[in-house]
Amino acid sequence: MYDELTPSDIKKMEEEIRHRKSVIRPQVLEEVKEARAQGDLSENFEYHAAKKVKNQNESRIRYLEKMIRTAKVISEDSAADEVGINNTVTVEFADDGSVETYRIVTTVRGNSLEGLISNESPMGKALLGKKEGETVHVQVNPSIGYEVKILKIEKTGDDDSIQLRGF
Image (cartoon, rainbow, N blue to C red; front, side, top):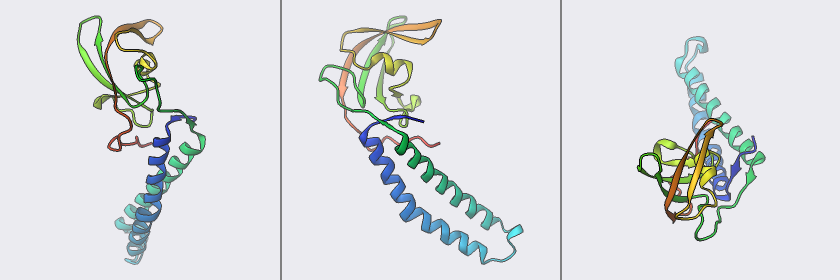
């Protein structure tokens, strides 16, 4: 795995694990117990549904624990005038002059539909460490690339409202 995670990503994962173990696990175990008490398990939909939810919760806990265990911890810090993790960047595309705003996040928070691009994506890699006013080449694959100009960098910092991606 070896995902690059920030200390705040790891903190959010640990909080989710605690919540899943202390709140969700007891709830789903009680649901399984109640459904089991209803009798014939072979035709008991509630029992099978409760077991599925229980197994999904346990899988998510294992997934998060493995992500933390195998993570490469990276810093959220960057120079005041450079693009870094958790910064919002406004860019202008050279080919058509359109302007877009993105936030650079780690892979576990990436969601391009919401303007959250991963630091490991072609755009994220190209922008990291660059300064306002620079024109940057974004190489999508060996035969496709494009140019963007960095118009504005905002030091936004970590945001608790950004959800971690599931598995």
